[in-house]
Every structure is written in structure tokens, then in C-alpha cells.
Image 1 (tube, one colour):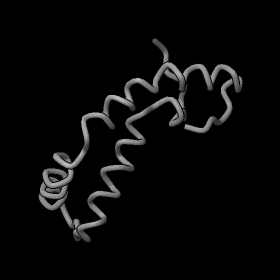
Image 2 (image 1 turned 90 degrees about the vertical axis):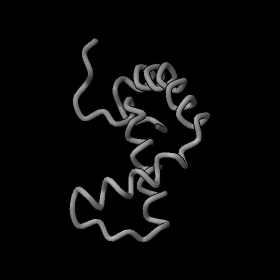
Image 3 (image 1 turned 135 degrees about the vertical axis):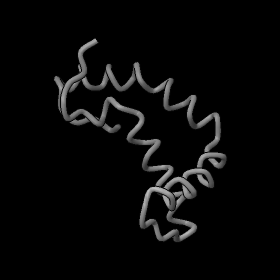
Length: 77
């Protein structure tokens, strides 16, 4: 399947990265290198609810529909 360039609306991983960033920022980590990032991610990942991940996956068809409806323009996602 071809993926349109510059289309974060279609990519639920963007929402997941935002969620992870929000979790990490609660702990006020000073991330200076990859080791610090790895530690922060190891703390954040178990806090991500499985239902959240499933909802992101389930949202993909709706994201495509919204994109098609808006002829490739921005959507609420």
C-alpha cells in the first residue's frame, strides 16, 4: 500500500509517541543521550494501557475515511 508523504493524520504512531512523551515529561527526566532515553522509555512503556493501543489500531480505517472525505486535507486526527 502506498503511504502519502507528510501524513501524520494517517499514522497512529504519532499519537503513541505523544503519549509516551507526556508520560516521560511527568518524571522530568533529563535525557542527554541514548542511555537516558532507553531508561525513560523502559519506565514509560509499562504505563501504556493495552486498550489505548487497541483504540489506536482500530482508528486506522476511520483515519483513512476522514482523509478520503477531506480529499487528502487535514483531519481531526
